[in-house]
Image (cartoon, rainbow over all chains, first blue to last red; front, side, top):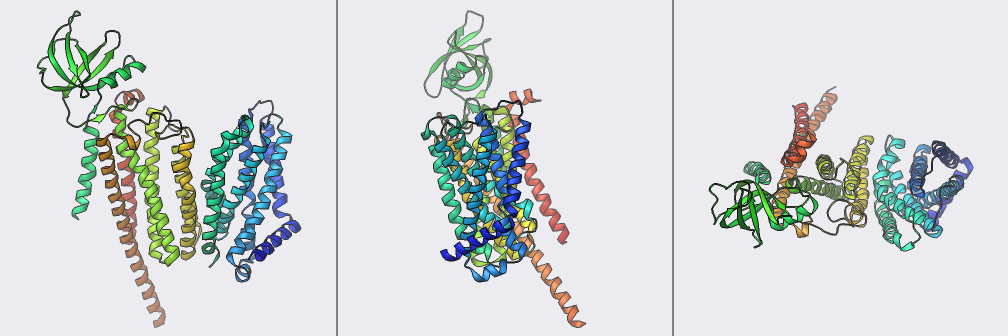
Amino acid sequence: MLRQAFAIFAKDLASELRTRYAINALLMFVVVTLAVIMFSLVGETLSSGALTGMLWVVMFFAAMSGLSRSFVAEEERGTTMTLQLLATPMAVYLGKLLFNLLLVVALNVFIVLLFLLTMDQFTVLQPDLFWTVMLLGSLGIAAATAIIAAIIARANTKGTLFPVLSFPVLLPLLMAGISATKIAVEEPVWDNAWPELQMLASYIVVVTTVSFLLFDFVWKD
Amino acid sequence: MWWKILLFFWIAALSVFAIVTPIAGNLADLAGVAQWSAAKTIPVRFMIENTGAAADDGGWLLTGRDAHGRTADFHFAARPEGLDAAEGYLAIARYDSDQHRVEVARILGGYPSLAFPFIPGLEERAKIIFFHVPMSWMTVIAFLVSMWFGIRYLRKKDMEDDFRSAVSAGLGLLFCILATSTGSLWAKFNWGSFWNWDPRETSIFVLLLVYGAYFALRSAIEVEEKKATLSAVYSIIAAATVPFFIFIMPRIMPGLHPGSADDTGSGPVFSSGMDALMRVVLYSMLLGFLVLYVWLMRIQMRLHRIKLRRSDTALSSTERSISHV
Amino acid sequence: MYEFLEQNAIYVVMLIVLMIWTGLFVYLFRIDRQLKELE
């Protein structure tokens, strides 16, 4: 099963690297969004806490615009049936999850680096906590969006439905993530973020487990 | 039939009881209120110890005693007619901290045998609890029922279960809208604005979004079986994240609702320390709305069965006409 | 209006009860309409 999952992951990665459909669109999306934020903030002095909110907004919408690709592309190319025949549902889910994970982590690292470079008002007091939160946040986003992407791939209005379905599910993650990032940015004590970190971790565990249990129903016809 | 009439009288009687029953404080409440607002008058219950004497400013002084045995001087503007020493009274009063006596503005009536406790800051608005809290509980219950029938559908593939799940979600949406709007109006009068992003407000808002997303998903899929499966899966995923809002977020984040992280007082509104009478009324009201929910559910199910039978007969008649040709 | 409701808090309670009844009635009307379509 793990070999199958890895094969699906490798296939997605190869097709992505060949067409660069998602990557190019996402990079442009991030650059454009950051540019809009930057020139709407010219001359303003914003606290790092307020900029944290902006950072998460960019991360959320970037995820919303790119992460449904993995399943929707299968549906569009008409390869869903082949995958259903060739691989176990578990392997498909795991492969797609791995691909989404890589995509989100890469995307978020890119966003954060760009954000740190362009916003000189944005200073981080605890870089180690900051990057931990970013990593946990990315894991959570990937875990929650993978199953929702699988659901909306079967619906008619795929593009608009994805953020609608994702937002309520992602909100606990967003709230805990924003709160923990604010602590990393503004307060010098790691321990203050402990409840939020626990919540992020338990969120990831819960969502991944539930997704594993339910993916069978979504995938099989 | 009889239980529907009983249900109507149950909810109606409870509503009337909740609205009519007076709020009655004691002398400690009065002294407490006097600390943060000098001009505040509140209803207090007291017994008269003796018939009193004329005060130096032309008014009348009595000694009163509340249910906890605290005594205080009660000052009336003029000699009150027909006040009996033995009887208890409910009066609108204000504590005069300079004179150390209670100024009585108006006698409301005899000692009420049933009264809700005086909660500082809520006062008469404490009665909203009986209407607002059942709405938010019903929202969560309807959501859980919807998820439960979703799970049952996934296991047994019975379309009836899917319909139950959808109907429960519809009722949940109704209760969710009611909980949000009543809570928002209450917040305007208690916390100063219609919406404050308190953790519990956030959680009810998320439930509203979940219900919205659930119906958006249902309307976007045409194949009945696919619609049933996917909406069941979505409601389970959403239910897995809802506990974060309802049970964890409000307790680790500071907020305005009782039971929040920064709530040190946990006053009488917090369910474990709630006044016994308030608790009885609240739970009875909840029971009433629960039965109402079951009733509405059954009406929808009957409607659904009629619809199914109709489409069946329509289908078979077209089949017959086709076979005739 | 706001001051009146602020001082007579019992009317706020009444308003909230009214809201709940309105909500339930709107729901009943919707069931009624569905039934009418069937008839």
